[in-house]
Amino acid sequence: MKKYDVIIVGAGPAGLMCAETLSQSSMSVLLLEKKELFGDKICAGGLTRKDMALLDVPEEIIEHRIRRTALYAGKRKSSTNAGEPFVFTVNRVEFGTWQKSRLHNTGVEIRNNAKVTQVDDTKIVVNGEEAIGYRYLVGADGYFSAVRKYLGLPQEKRLIGIQYRVPDPQVEPQLEIYLNSKYFYSWYAWKFPHDKSFVIGCAADPRKVPSHQLKANFKKWLTENGVDVSQAKYESYPISYDYRGYRFNDKYFLAGEAAGMASGLTGEGIYQSLVSGLTVAKTILDGNYQSSQMEAVLKYNAVQERILNILWKAGPLRGPIFNLIVALMNNKRVKAKINNSFS
Ligand SMILES: Cc1cc2nc3c(=O)[nH]c(=O)nc-3n(C[C@H](O)[C@H](O)[C@H](O)COP(=O)(O)OP(=O)(O)OC[C@H]3O[C@@H](n4cnc5c(N)ncnc54)[C@H](O)[C@@H]3O)c2cc1C
Image (cartoon, rainbow, N blue to C red; front, top):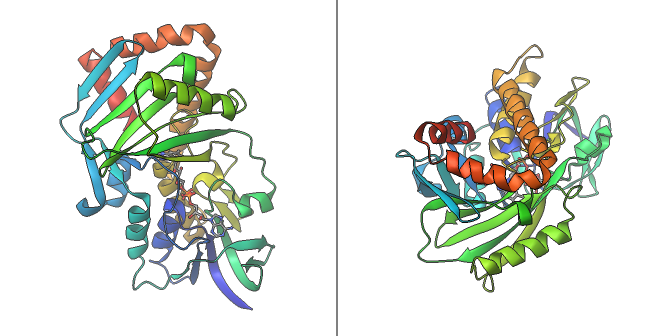
């Protein structure tokens, strides 16, 4: 049986970041991806300045550099022009392919169409037939993580994200956020511009809002707002914010959504995945490694969850709170503060 120092399961942002960091060491690393393509993931494809600072994403794969936001609550609207771009949209496959290209000429062995079908304490099995041994195992395999399941960690806190990809040759280069307590409760709808198209979607925790209800509400909202999705592709996928740690017995590690690293309020998870992928790699290389970035991300997620809980408990007051947020966003200083904390 072949054996590696590290096997990373899943080549999303977390797994690729983890592999890239480990590639600078002498460890033997195997990265396994079940799909043909890298980055083939249902997502709105919105990156923030924090992602850009971490990865230096090349110009050619950025579809829009967004400076303008329009925030709506009922009839209220607040528009922002940040001057500098603060959100960047990418096609996730292009982003994943580019991240993978950073592993060219490193010692990392990468395999696609390689699904981990079984996890044991010394080996994993690929596509039901090939056993491969490991010293360290990294689960970067997203929401339905096989490694997380092997570790016996529950998966309770999640959002269901739903979205449409709508063709639009004249898409406006702005981010739109719609606060609407009647349809989206504590969450919101988003619109991200892409290449000759936009992605419009929303998310909610199914323990609070059953998915069929969210879907029906979203449809009503789209109709009321005159958004034609007849030519659009419908997509849906869960998002985990059920964090239970990333390091287990100094042998098993979880990164990204396998670790429940997304935000329960916004559904944002790429930055958290990158930071946790990096942290896991550095922890494997140095067992005493302490990551201030990881601490900051966990704190950020905790704050977002607190906001989410406050909004949930607010019940019928959510509508007036949303109106107030939009009114406050028309104040320059508040606007700058909120924009900074979210990007
Ligand atoms: C509708 C929606 C919109 C979103 N929009 C945004 C956004 O705009 N910005 C943002 O920051 N976040 C967004 N997110 C969240 C973001 O997509 C995820 O948080 C992020 O992709 C998580 O990265 P990851 O590397 O942890 O996992 P993933 O990107 O899910 O990657 C995991 C990889 O593991 C592979 N894999 C799974 N199981 C196995 C196995 N058994 N064997 C081998 N490989 C396996 C998968 O094929 C996949 O490639 C959105 C999510 C949804 C659902």
